[in-house]
Amino acid sequence: MNPYESHRLRGLLPYPDREANKYSRGHLVLVAGSAAYPGAACLAALAAQRMGAGYTEVVTDPSALPIVQSFRPSLVVRSDETWLDGEPLTASPARPGACAVGSGFDPGDERSKRLLFRALDTADAPVLVDGGALAALATDEGRKRCRERFVCGLPTVATPHGGEAARLAKLLGLPTDDARSLARSLSLAYGIVVVLKGPVTWISDGEAEVCMDEGTPALAKAGTGDVLAGMIGSLLAQALAPVDACVLAATLHAHAARFASDDLTSVSVTPEDVLDYVPRAIAAMGFRDGASR
Image 1 (cartoon, rainbow, N blue to C red):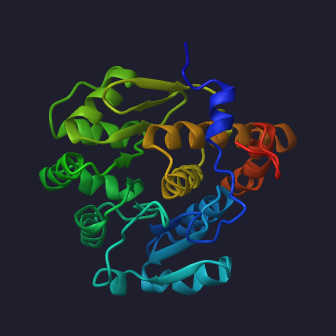
Image 2 (image 1 turned 90 degrees about the vertical axis):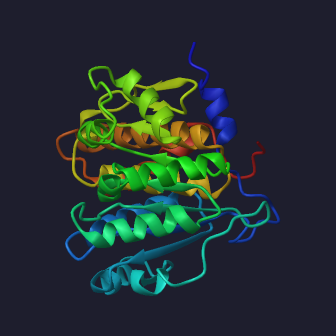
């Protein structure tokens, strides 16, 4: 029996309290984009806003600053050069927060490693690792940092596709022939929650595995993973438990893509379309303004 039936997922939706402010609704620090891939930061940032984060801050390559700033004026955008030496992210019940790192990173760039390790070393809050940052995670230094965070009770989430998961597994010689087992073994080995993306997505915290099989081939396009990372990061910033955040975001992401496919066909759906249909997916799950949890 799937523990995440529709009524439970509906109850996880982050309904804004009447007294909410932008800080109480969650601060997501999104360390994303690069000179080559500035669009990834834009996609992930808008996904975070659509998913409810009250304060979305984008930390990106200096060359990408004007692109992200012009994309969405409501975003707070700053250079990753200043972020490396800035104050670390801290979260509290009154001001929850999270950090999402890696969407649009160049996996072979030393900058990617520096930014990821800074987040893992300093964030007193959940950290999500995506995209090009997963290459730095698949190292002895990356694994050590994840294990240290696990011991300290700080959640870390990784969102690899099959190839990235194989790289994480290769470091430790783990078998990769079964997706469910791979998600679990990576979770145990690194001390993280794993979202193993694919036609069927497996989410594991090392104790249990949850299957999300509602996806569509429409999601098989570059950029849809950035959207998912922004959605999960947003829910983590709103203090959802890591597995809950991952299952809810992955389900809504799939539903949004299906709604987009119904109107546009699975051939024509783009990541931007998936973003546009996230509010419809939320509404279809039963969320309505004025309703209580």
